[in-house]
Length: 370
Image (cartoon, rainbow, N blue to C red; front, top):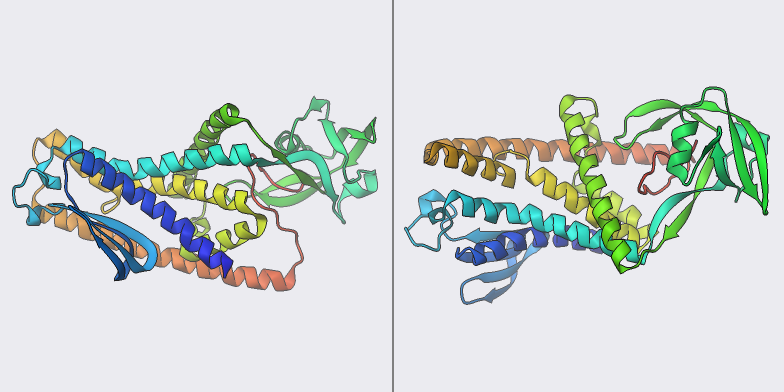
């Protein structure tokens, strides 16, 4: 039950902050906001404001703001209507939604960095059966400080060297205050990168320990900026690879997939849920800015086109573009639901046939085993 509540809260916060961006900038720009709704369907609660009606609806997974004159057919010629504004003002109003998601992602990363950000450390958390590390003498709690003569500070440094090794690796480890040298054979195994692409890499057979690092107020601010930049690059790269066909579209999560991820995060703790919220905000912001009709990016594209042409597209053309956009979004939703259901079935089958360990994804995580 808790995971369902958290799932609803996570999605509601994402959507409300997005719509609040539109709402706030519209009001600041002199555009009347007729309605601000949280959710869809039957209204459970309605508060009538001076200019805006606020409501909470039956299905909380969504929300919207209705601007005066947001459709050209509804225009009455009033100064406070959306389409009475110049294209530049309309672009600001539309862009504000993704921008607010981005700001929230930054604030969440800032908070997480102060609470304590989890990393995969270069300390052995577990030595796995069936891999060479156990026979070579690697033990739990060993700190690996050097691999093949190169110093390593964390798990990312460690895996980047081991994965590329051919037959063996030379380790320098710290154990009980002593420094030891071990030669460990490697074993070829399949793993996935940050985009889910399968690749053959060399592994020793160890899992990392998780280290929680807390930052002060100012350090956390800088760290949040770094996290935001890294995840932005990762998201944009992932979308580009998907469009190019390098990354399978099957890896995209829909509503059911997000629920499953949220459920896993709830089991880990508050920081994992906040981390998930931050990543989802980045994803929502970037995806919304894609130049697809109906999405914010599609509207911005049309308004930019209007500025270049010095006149808007005809109402008939805009309606056709909108219908195409709605069709694309509807097909995408069906595809995502199919993906989610396929993954759930695979997960159930996998649980019955395998006892493989699962690890929570953490920053700079290129795999939990090597």
